[in-house]
Image 1 (cartoon, rainbow, N blue to C red):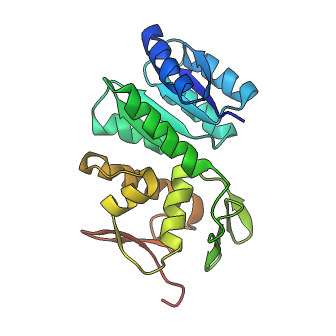
Image 2: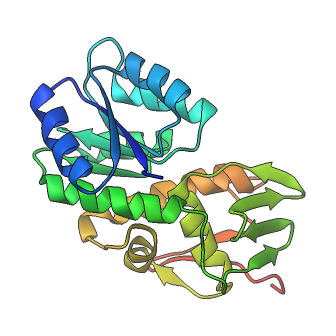
Length: 230
């Protein structure tokens, strides 16, 4: 069955261009012109990925993402004309999985969509496992995360990041390495993306995010999953 992609943007030429490129890849496309319609369509059509422009009438992309995240862990990709770090970090903290700044190449959007869908696909290889550290459990075949038996909802990027860390407890990963694992590409400009995903993960899995028991910061290098025997 074809994957369903929802695109929300108030510029018709962007909707037309992205729709053409994504349809050529075999995806089913839904388009809306504002954040309010994006929330409504996401709720009733259950798309496999949502592409949101930040600046839209009636409801902007950030507010639409907040409402979608309350109901769904669907992959979210932001399109933004804003290049300031604070704007990009705001989107990631809301729960976006990725962002692309305007102007962009439609082929880049297609590549990012493919990467997001791969990360959210539950049909993983037979080598996948279940990992446990303390009360934290990551079940890769089921794509579930629990802490002390309680189910934790993660975005695809958060799940991929956590799986990468817990599969190799004690190993220190640089931010660039984690970007490569999580996004399938690593650019220095996106290094802070990992910091935001780690911050969001800690809020969800740690008892005290300011004093993490699981994901440790290795200052000047990156992050690691603390081994159970430490």
